[in-house]
Image 1 (spheres, rainbow, N blue to C red):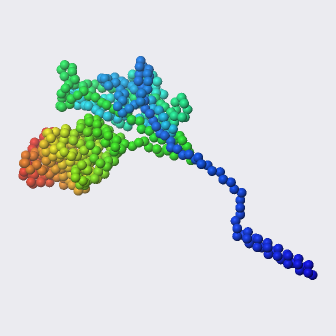
Image 2 (image 1 turned 60 degrees about the vertical axis):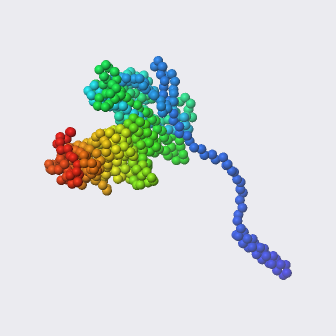
Image 3 (image 1 turned 30 degrees about the vertical axis):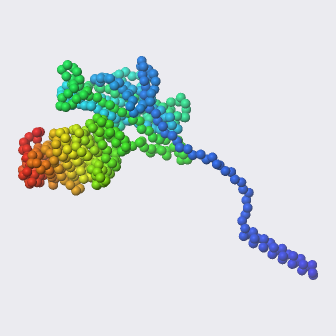
Length: 489
């Protein structure tokens, strides 16, 4: 009996101990076999995009050496005298010396151009008669003059954004320089052709004096032998060759370097140069046009955020998008908060605005004293407010449209001016400010609000301008008015 009780106690004690063990186990965590491997050299580096452009030095029809193209490199024969049929070819080599694949395109732009006068007495530019082309050397290894001339199909004046003609999608694609030495995958050779076609006649025949010498004076103020200086640019960006974890297309939308404010400022700083825009540009501060330079907007827009407010001690220098004391601005629109074209002081030479549009700021232009020079605006649309000073040799507005702006509809004249074949929107006003009583305003064959069906709205006289409100009574009473009805004079 006693042994049975002892065994029963022992069994109960074992059950209790087991329950306690399970309870303790539920309140703890399990242990696992573990080990650690540390990777301490996970290296991330940046790829390198680097393109070099060389040109060939030729000797006896063969390549003597390749030299790098620099900003001041003269690629073509500077002593060449172009005439119908004359053709030049320059060989180029573009190399990818970086570690990333790249795509490129070739651009050709006019750096500067000097106009001449032909034997008919007409002004002309060489860019109207020279043609250029890009030839992939893989397609043409040896060609005659006529064959090369056939490749020159792009006119210089429209070649500001010519594209390389050899690769798929009009792009030149280059693999990195470590792809395969000697494989040719990281470089390409091409040629630029410039020719004067054989169909060109005396319209490009430069006028010399009776002795056959180059004119020192020319005709109608045009001097110098006509010439053109052009530049070559080769922008590059990423190409879809390298891979990440999702494929090779992560850089398929990579864009080429865009033209920016700093580049525009640098280009316009060169006297007597020609800058042709290939895209729209944003400007945040005034950019000066060098003396004698030409800005050809090529149909593009300058968006100006130059402040149109009094800033600092010289408020005038904080407002214009383009500051121009002489030269030519054409085929350009300026919109935004600031003024369009202006001068801080007076003109230093003739200034021409051709196919120009400005709106948004308080002034489409604000030109100071003429200092004996000419100010010409033609084929342009002017919205809002404009002003020009005195002491001009002539001021001419031809085939222009004057529109009401957001706040103004006025042109303020401090000197004589001629308005020829212009249209004035209803409510626009010519404000004469001379005060000396000798200003002459000539309005020739202009229309009012686009309507010339009614004879009273064809403006040829001072009285018609007064009746339409184009000038006010004070101007009518105080200032001279030329009433010659001939719109060509």
